[in-house]
Structures are given as C-alpha cells and as structure tokens.
Amino acid sequence: MSRRVLLPIVFAGVAVVAVAGWLWLRGEDPRPAAFHAEPTSAFYAAIETRQNDAAPLTLQEVFTPAARSLGSLTLEATREFTECDEVLWGATAAGCTQALQATYRGGSMVGQFVIFNLGDGRAADALVAALRKDGFVRQEVAFDPAGSRAQARAMGHYVTVSWVGGPAPAQDLVTALVSLDGLGRVVQGRIVAAT
Image (cartoon, rainbow, N blue to C red):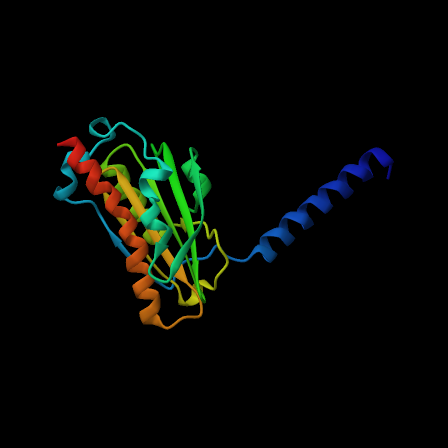
C-alpha cells in the first residue's frame, strides 16, 4: 500500500479507538438516587412569562450573605452561565437566558444549587420533565451519586435544582436538601415585584 492510502487509514483507526476509549472510560453521567420534581402552579402566575419579570437574576440576589451558610453547608463557589445547556447533560433548556449555580460543602456532605431563567412556565415544566427522565444537571462537585438526593421545581418561568450527596445519614441529606431548596425563595420576591 502507498503511504498516501496507509496514513489516513491509520489516523482513522486511531481516532475510532480514541473515541471508543473515551466513551468507555467516562462512564455514565450521574443521576441522583432519589429525585422529586414539581411543575409550576397558579401560585406563580404573576411570573408565568419572562415578559412580566424581565430583569435578569444576579448572583447577589440569589446567594445573599445569609445564604453563605445553610445549616451545616457553607458556600464554596458561585457561577453564572449564559449558555444554560453547559450546566446540563441529556436535556436542553429551550429559551433559557441564564443559569446561576452555587456549590456548598459541610462535613461529609456536598451540594449544589442551580436556578434557570426560562421564557415561560411551559418551558420550565418541559425542563423539569426532561430532568426526570432524559438527563440532569452536571455534577459540579465530586460525590457518590448512589446515595444522593435531588429536587427540581418549576416556579413560573424559573426552574430550581437542589442536589446533595456524600456519606451522610439519609436524614442529614434530607435536611441539607431542604436548606438548599430554600434558595428558591428568591422567586417570591419576583412575584411581589410583578404584582
């Protein structure tokens, strides 16, 4: 065989082996062991669409000084994304303009919280449904998802996702999850402002 034919065949073979190895070694994307999901409700009618609540969320609005410590969890880092799908695997957040994320750590537990700013309640419900069956948020902090717990809520045009894990008793994980989920109360202020 000539070199012109042999080199492309070798490079193609190496590429196939590299992709197959990457897929085999990366494993599956993690999902929580226990997951609860809620669609939006009439309570959030005032912020059913982003038109009624146009101002973007800020990190300072969601992760206030009071949110630096949530029970036994302490805030480690916050990030803002304009490409919401960067935070997700196996699901897409259609019409999402921002996602705010925080990671927490406390003792043997870790947690993360994400709030997505979508176009309307229908898009929020679609994301929650996708999180239930198609994909989930990317795991930002390392923990074994086998014993983890998570919750997603559509609230008008927002979706919040709280996820905790670590080698802790189930009751401690539930308490930490409730504390993280409380960060979603920021949406109540948006309801008041929109009415």
